[in-house]
Figure (cartoon, helix red, strand yellow):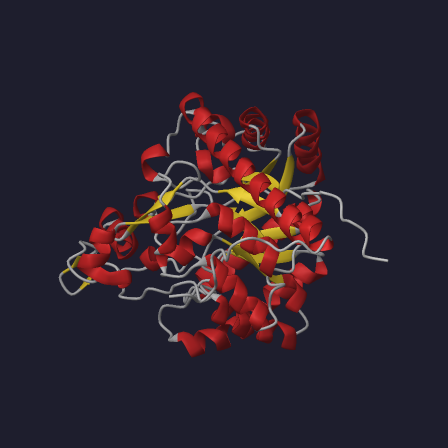
Length: 415
């Protein structure tokens, strides 16, 4: 008697939007005196654009941030304002708004350099991260997304030692609260005017594995996961399928726990001029023999990245199969197929978080941005549903009946 025929049961992922997509949804003169109004209005906005979840962004308030807005390529958002403690009263207000709108939380996000060299600055950031952890517990979400960062004064191996000394205690605090810390892998080349490219040491599968081994040694391996963003892989000349295959080959296919849905469109002219290392000189971020003290000048450090590429909001770039083959933009369908085929995930419990950093469309006007984000969310959902259907049909229904899949498809490691 043969195996039973599998039912067609596609499993789409959960769609979310990072609230940094619209920093000023609630004007600062309204939200500074009433901080949780910003969350309430973002929940309503998310419902209106068709996103059932939000990734709630927090950051140091502009009044205490150590990075001026003029020096940021993609300004952060303190939608969750943690100048004052986030207590049960505030949490109940937010949870009430979640029930009223029907919009939930995928996770909380705080993107900052957790390995910054200055002891006092690092202490301040770590204390803020603990506030984020506490807010996550009160809001009944189980994950926080952020960076590891880098001490620019140290080379890579000493940064691993620093990770063990100062980051492991953060992961122990996450474990005590039942949280997972998901690391986004952006190399953050423009974080410093120095000629360093990898300023977040958790930038690729090799470093993820090295860091996870340190975590395992200290009993916090389950707390360290990756919030994978394919735009950064494209930036570094990698392709998603090969990265996922590498993780599977090495026995670390469990490391990726969620996804940022943001693309990258590589400018072949910029690559011809500077290569994948980006612009290395005459950027305008230095004044004589030292980095410029003008924050607006320091923004030019990001030419290490933007000279060769530009962020894509999913659905806004032209369909370009040749660019997919050259790893110069994201092949969203294969990205979603590869995740299901190669990673140890439950798609129905996995979040796809739309992250909007496409410069020409970073509109700080609710009415104008709403249809743009609505379209991107719809595109993301449709692509993922197509991938879910293909995977279920080919790997479950057809496989149960012994029917071969046609063709070859994209292959890992192929050059």
